[in-house]
Image (cartoon, rainbow, N blue to C red; front, side, top):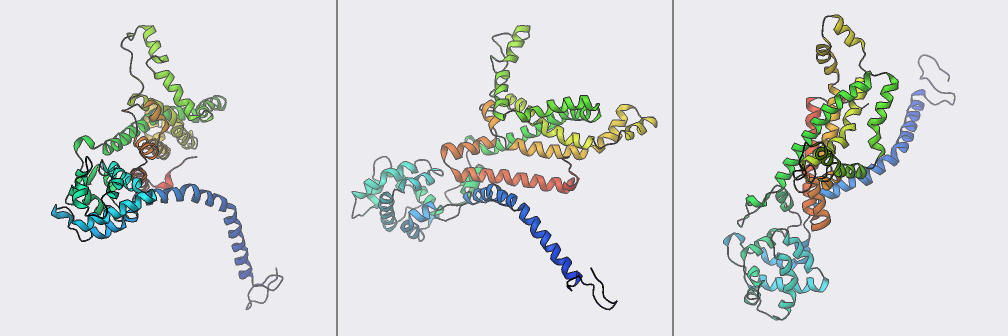
Length: 424
């Protein structure tokens, strides 16, 4: 590079100002860096951002009634749903036209299925009504629809029409209300479901409490193992590290299945207890298909996720700290509590956050070893996706779980500081 006089700017060999040349070089480096991470950004966007946005949108999307019953939606706008009276003949006539049109397009089952999530019997009502309505042409429809055998009582119930009008909005809060064990009353207000129908709050509570217990147990078991890894001679520490990492080399399904073999009524543990005489053969321990099975299996599976962050922090603590504490008169235990343990809190925090978030979203292990009392909310979400096809409710449950994780992350950042978390 060449320089000019003191009053002139520095320039490069080709006469370009040095400042401009540096700016171009920095922009070029930023473009290169962006192109290097672009595949990762696309991967995250396609497999992480889009599914989450889709889930959040499904939890409030409600297009069925509005698009399949358009005439009825318009006719119901002038009906006062709080009066407790049935709609007039024009509403029934509009419903008759919509039913015939929906049957022609094969959509009557779809709208019936959607409304059946809110009121049992609606699926059969919309499946059976079109062929009955076809015989009623050209009307009037109100009295004839109410008189239909078996299903006519639903057409004569104001709650049916209140539901149709309420769910005619393209967006709905019904899925979130169901996820919170709430529903709409006849007057449109929100109320709790009957006691015997409140299941989701209980499942959320079970998921969080068991996840806390599992996280606490991984700390109790993982802390001494991580301490040994950090303080043992290299040869022994390497062997112990292989044992810690060995589960990662085995399929999750295989590990869970092995616990089924160990914990079963006829499994290894019960057979050993019977053989030693500690348990009678007719009173074998129930260690599987309950919370015990879920707790034991998930603690084993998630234990490495606690050990590794702890080890990464402990390995950086100079041994001279403990020797200095001992030289000043502290016992080994007191030196560990006052000096060593506080330095490992960042690893404990990282491991706790990692294990807890993984635990509340686990699905395979509770499904296989949890039975009826040991399943998590994730199993209920999967059931709605796979069996009931109630994707809106499943998405609402997933969104609430996602929101809880974000709140937990924000609290951790505010209390401890995410910048202090160390994973290695």
